[in-house]
Amino acid sequence: MNWKHYKALSPTQKRDEIYYIIGLDLGNDSTGMAFYSIPHNHPEFIDLSGGYGKPSVPTVMQYISETKEWVFGEYAVLNRGAGTEITLSSLMERLGHADYVDVDRRSLSVASVLALFIKEILGNVRSINPKAEIVGIIATVPAYFSDQAYEELRRAFAIAGYEKELIDLIPDRECVLSHYYKTAPDRPQRVMLLDFGAREIRGGLYNVIAQDGGILATSLSSLFSDAISMSKINQDITEFFESFVFAEVKQTRQLKEHVLAFSHQHRDMLFQKNIRTKPIKAYFNFTYPPFQQTITHQQVQNLMAPYTRRFDIFIKDVLEKSIGPSGEVDAVLCVGGGFEMLWAREAIGGLFPHTEFYKNPKMITCEGAAVVAARALGVDTGDWLVLEDRHQLTNDICLTDGVNFLPLVERNVFWWQNHPPRLVIVNQEITGDLDLTLCTRTQNDELKNIGCVKLTELPSRPKGVTRFEISLKFASNTDVVITVRDVGFGELFPRADYVREVRVSMVI
Image (spheres, rainbow, N blue to C red):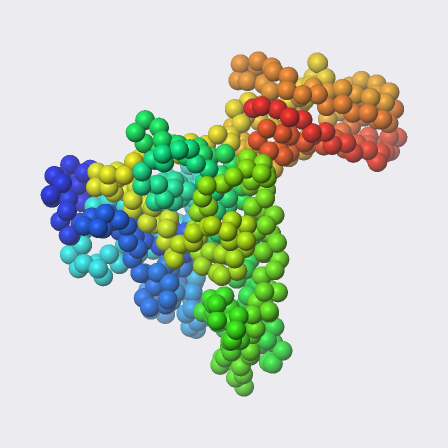
């Protein structure tokens, strides 16, 4: 049914048990789905795993050439047949590039492959109710999505046959905040949202207030680090198991594939609570001869210790670039499959002792999407949440000597991004000191001075032969650090050992 037709139904008609409102979290690594339970007025996730122990499934498709059929999820990850299977993963990341794959001498777009996956996933609704009719879908999209990726994902839903049911594609963080805030808070709150997924960890701080009968969530920062990701941890865990296997038997390509599947099946046991008091035994029954290995809690701690340290650094960076290290946070929301691991919960719990963790952190995003869908269709009566970003620069930031301008950062970029350095030749004689002005420039070319960069004890050089590499980095949303490095000018004026950092407080 077209979601617009369902929205026009009477409240009594909307409560028919055959109608399902769906929230879909299409992750690059795994996918979760929830529906909004109208009788109970809250979302409930749908177990897609088929008994594998987690309600989510890997976002993976596999084509089996012998039978000319597609399989998805856990089976696509674990299946090891004749070696001619074509396994496709990271589907969401590949959207937006007009990417194609060769399957059985045919060229298929990634969007059409993802459409097969979406059709399979949404078909699980009928496992709850054989007569189920989907009347509305909100699907989440990650923060890094481009306009082209949005377009290809919409096309995937259309190919899957759900174009009329798709209400909208909503940023995943908006869905999580909508799940947490049923009604507007009675006072302004600061909320930290951490999303620990396959690609990276993302973190941001939000000011949340009541506004115009709804909720306004203003983003103060949005940082990410690919030094902490499920894909890196999975790689480390695989190498951890490999160290035991290849100490016993000779390494082969087929054996590495077996270890990869073994790691996928057994990684969760490394993070169980009972491993603290009782070591676990891993049975490697795919080797000849088979053997078992005892794994202790200390070994797991040693494996995860680098990630625990990176967590600490990352959280401090989020706070420093948002409200300062002494700022207070009212709530910490931890979502994503990474927070199913005990060590990750403990790493955050050590920094924020009162953090409440969800039982199924991966599923919160799709449950939030179901809530957004229900509100859009007039079923959920909670306050509507609007997400607003204020960490995007509205002006260019330049350096000037009064005559010439050097743009360091352009408008419309996010202040927390890495900004490439600029090379500049100083068109004047240098006798030791140089004063530069930091300014912002609007779209109308209006200039506003925001600070001074004083360079002292420069190497003396004639006009036109002093060359600098100048970079700008935001220490916070109001403070920038300008780094000036001499890079020399040919053989006559080689690079000097000159580096200066100047911190400038500013208001964008």
